[in-house]
Image 1 (cartoon, rainbow, N blue to C red):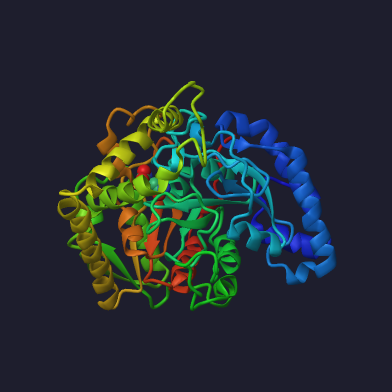
Image 2 (image 1 turned 90 degrees about the horizontal axis):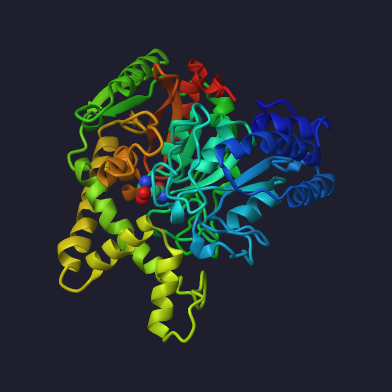
Length: 491
Ligand code: GLN
């Protein structure tokens, strides 16, 4: 199997009898053996388990028929905060270093039913907190375009591996940008679906009102094929809903020039101060390409968007402090070895040893903003700001805009270590993506250029809630009109 296989090409070859899941798995494993170590992209890479999974997929293909399985024979990489039964699920944390999942996340069940199988668990920022993948307890991930640079985070292992063609697709999770921003840094496609459209059951919670699982792929068409399978109502996630739309991959084929006649809104706030000049010029060219593809451009404003990072770091940390309370060394997670400890000290020591610095900082911040006396000043206020931001987006769409177009990240990939001593600069990496999570909207990052140093730059498109059809067809039409997605890192 050559290194440039897509989800689509694998399914086609399995259907025509030219490829089996086991052969596809072998090809992935071979490439992974030589490249994964350079990137530190994988946390668990068990060849025997992957081949057993592939064999089970082949059996399913044989019994049910490849034509009835939308992802027949597709190898999938999975971020290590998504449960795969019998496999370690560490969340990039020492706290869960030895935790073996006892059940499959709903998305994993759906993928298996569709004929896909899991080939590896991917490195990530601890508990999905980070924008550079330097917060993993198991070491930083490297950007395949230049090993001195970060791949973005928190789904950095997923993004680096797909960019390096170790598999055609990976699952990531996105709370404030963690699918789109690493996709942009690694030159691939990252889709964050509408909140509620993909089940979170089996995803280890970070900020429950913001978290959403989605695919990282090398083409928009592959993202649409994944969305066809991932989206759906799930009884084990009370926030999941039945998506009003379906047939995403088919829609792309039927409407390849979807940008024709669309109105694309450019939120001016994202193009003002703080935007890197090279990212800015890539985006200017992307806007021109979108126009050439037949879309009308309209400048719009999102007046409250500048408060999004502040509101996010109140809401996300508040939710994280509650979600991470379960890791106490008794019910779950790392337990300190100390003897004769009282209960409080057992909790304190276990949590102190198990969690890394960034996670502790966020638990403290989240506990503070929820504490009595500060709740109204911070947490309630942040929720009001969240509502204002949602209304800004709604008003922009109501003004006749089909999609919004922004940079995915205000800067290109940065060097390992460059932002570690400046948390605010790190937090600002997600300034273009966070508002989308606060408003629960779908967003996608697609490659739109490279810097002079050869590093990828991404463009983000944003659609109204539950309108992935417009999002994916628009992104696909842009992709067809450009060549950026065809470039591969020099590995
Ligand atoms: N970088 C953001 C954070 O650190 C977003 C993370 C995410 O989307 N999981 O919280």
